[in-house]
Image 1: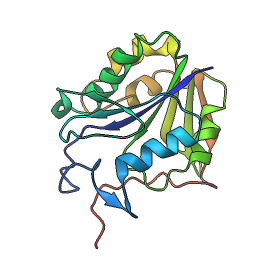
Image 2: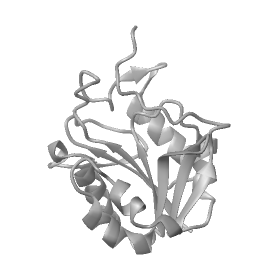
Image 3: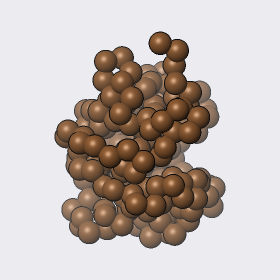
Image 4: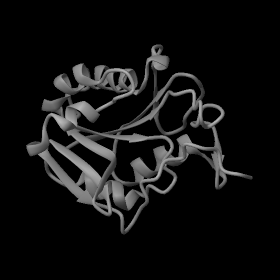
Length: 181
């Protein structure tokens, strides 16, 4: 199985005070940390969807979402549209750029778990990342609207979800507000 990694990083970070991708946290840009975590967990290739901020991202292929201002759904569509042309990719693991507590061990658990929709859980609460088998991509892409991303698609397929607990090796908290420095 070939599992690609996708980091959604196109937003403007309104509450954060600017785009999160280039923000340096613990000595590394959030986008670089996210790419490393996915790569170290076995995701290959890794793609980063950028929009409000554009820049180089080593060890990843940058995909530009020109509709980034419409919400996360368009970033997920951008990634899936690109991946459809990559016939060697069987599944995609989707993560967010602003998860500084995500670890490669947690991602590897999700990557290595069988299922069409595999969702990371933190003490029983669903979070990111989420892995999707190729057969789900067409419906997933059409349901990704506005700032919903995959939420509606997942809600419509409760019997197809595999929940994987990762709260013992990672935190699922996102960085919505810029930390005090």
